[in-house]
Amino acid sequence: MRTAAAGADRRGAAGGPPGARPRTMLQALGARRFLIGAWPWRALVHLATTPLSALFFGVPLFVLTLPLYLPAFLVAEAADGLAAAPSAGTVLALLASGVVLTAVFGPLMALPAGRLERFRLWLVDERDPGTGHRSPAEPGLWAWARLRYTESATWAELALLVLTAALFTPLSLGLAALGMLSVMLLAAPLLASEEVPMSVGPVRVEGAAEAVPLLPVGVLMLVAAVYAAGVLTGAHGVLARALLRDRGTAELRADLTEVTRSRARLVDAFESERRRIERDLHDGAQQRLVALSMQLGLARLDLPADSPAARSVAEAQEQAKRAIAELRELIRGIHPQVLTDRGLAAALPELADRSPVPVEVAAVPEERFPDHIEGTAYFVVSEALANVAKHSGAARAELSVRREGGALVVDVTDDGRGGADPANGTGLTGLADRVAVMDGRMLLSSPPGGPTVVRVELPCQ
Image (cartoon, rainbow, N blue to C red):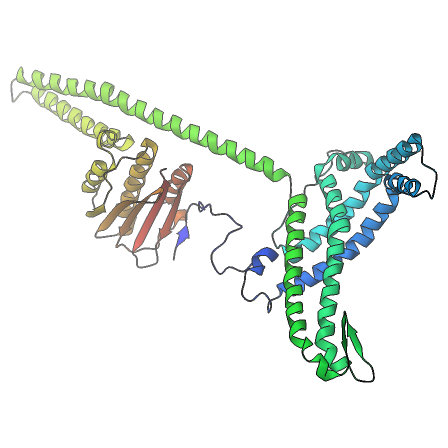
């Protein structure tokens, strides 16, 4: 049982593990079972509805924007001598009226066309593109129209409508003709006879015997038509997704980038503050306690050994020594000096020696890593060993640290009872959050009965 305690596996959603079910037509084309799967049928349905989409929305848009095309027609007619040359004013008036009609009625055609294209996109791309449209901040038709006519999503839908009608519809009709021709070649042995000869393109077939050699040609043409349909619908899906996707995604990505940068700055500030506190405690409070202990020791020398005052001074000195020891442990927990001076190779074995549970240090690299990575790795090991001692009931533990590519991998394994759960207050959630701040991830494997393995991967490029 292996669970990600910090949802921090940042692999792209578009990739996926090997053998995963394709989610787009272009991914399905690379699968060996493409021809016997559902994707060819989805491609055919998409191709069949492409002309319908252009017919329902493209033809009305073409009629409304006809003044845009009339000047070119009139100039061509004049060049052929079939009509008088149009005046410049006429051409400009027609162009202006076409632009106005396109600006006014184009978005009205694009809105339902975009909704239909989002529905059709599911046939070739199962990922949700979202919607770039936003809800009006104010009620009323004017607020709705003002928002829709100023949104980039509306004009992107209009561009998709124009491309669907002008480019993909002719290509879809051409593929449909190729598919019909391949079906005719396959059916030629059944349809052709000597009494009723059959013409398939330039080929004239008189009888079933002459039509048999056309069967393999028909099969090859049908397979080619199916794959061509997949490529065409896949390309249409890529274009539709690029134009219909939620434009707010880019803004969200920018916000996440800024959050990541601010988090990194907070981590740096936190580490600097930890070091300052450690330095102040080491150079300030600890030195004063040491001086106090020495003064108490000198005072004991001036007092009779069996006097009450000597016993009180001795007790005070012992308390000062215990306070010094606790303060040293606190300083070591904040950021041990050995970690700063000699790195993980020296600090982690020392940490393992202080653990109540025997810990075998399998491997620790000698190389030095960035300060924040070393500090996080030390904190991870310290917290994990504390959990082993408090909650696992383990007799022994093992610590392994190694570098794998661009990541520092820390494994802490124990032979305890297992069943560790980040939600039960063992500190694993805070540990995962600390790792996530470093753009790393924590994995936990803890089946009932053990063993428990805590793995942390920290990027250290």
